[in-house]
Length: 287
Image (cartoon, rainbow, N blue to C red):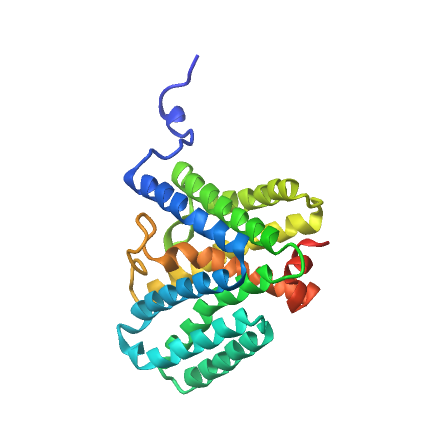
């Protein structure tokens, strides 16, 4: 009745409940409530928590990219982070955005001069994009909480589908030179899961599921993959395996937030383009 032999061995199986998977589940259960608290309360609470997370990301970024050489920029990084946080608390989103644009110009200038300091200032933009994009979405005139939940659910589902498909199916590698463990099966399954998650969340949040929302979920899922690959490229460029060991089963906070960070930035760009700074979430979800 049941097939045995070599053919049966080719049937994909779910990965066993390894110590790594247990750590991932426990970490997710601990991090998810914090994320939903940030989305629910918003305001200064969201600014403080996301800026604190951004500084953890920046610290790990500096450890990966500079081996301590970024310490001379520590005061500058703290000043820019404080400036960004104050502007966001005051709801001067455009001021915070202009501040990061100025840092981006400085990064380009340093890079053209061949200075290693460009990695430090570039990391500042990378890290502070997290509070900037999240708070701009949460401060929207409508659907701020819904947009944050939508994005998180899409990315978390993308990660889950990609993990289980990658472990259970395996197959050809996606980009072995950058991330040797990622497979095409995991990549495609992650995108599929992200779109499914978008549809489910649309029903839960009372949104009208449409082709534009499906494409949005696809784009956010793709951004999640892209953020993960970008961080892998940075670590591979500097011959580092993990950004840190802060979160069991995930490595550092940068390892856990890379996909979410990229997705929130893409969401902010789409939302601002359609609804402006003061209705970013409305522009993102209203089609």
